[in-house]
Image (cartoon, rainbow, N blue to C red; front, side, top):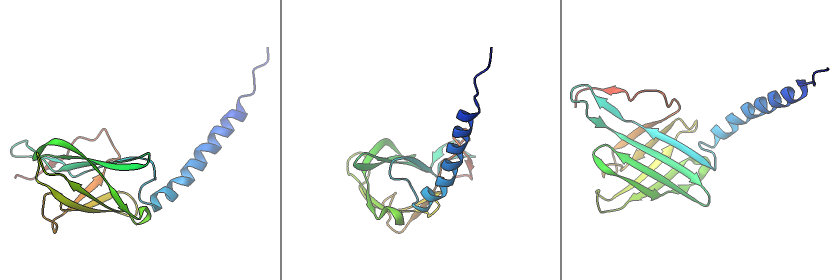
Length: 149
């Protein structure tokens, strides 16, 4: 009995993977792809008290609307807010944290050209205070420790 030739499907799969790898730098040039989810965080655990500090922002670019899921350590509720982009290629965004369970705030941000960081101003109410959040790429990594607070 003769075995079927499996080299053609393997060659096609390898070609597709190589083509996908070539497309990744093109996506990075736009900061974020048009559709998908990106998580940015600067969360850390205090070495002294074991309290959680920082924020996590999940940018969801789905359908016709983009939104951000905000999780700030010092404000318990999770907030979902619509995001306005000022030119996706430039990576600038803005959103408003509504009044209610948290202090209201106008937040502006910039995604780095390589898509690895998100810098937000106004996240904690001060429009001059900048918070730099790193994009999560390794989901197995533990939350890092930060100095005493």
